[in-house]
Image (tube, rainbow, N blue to C red; front, side, top):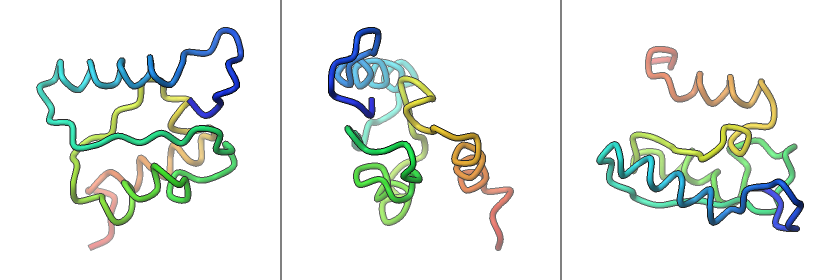
Length: 95
């Protein structure tokens, strides 16, 4: 959840974290950490977000999967979505 101002109809960041945790545990995945970029503009790319960014850069070797409760929390633009998908797919990476 990127906004903590309590707009009606939004699912709280705590509920979203619970949902993502339940999903990971249902797959029997080990949870190595979490991130929350609350009140961060959607204009900030995933790599430059204060909490998510390090997981995509210096901590990328610590995990095998990222889980979001809602995909719109991960990406606000189709370009960001495509960029992360391309980055995450080993078949698309340069040698």
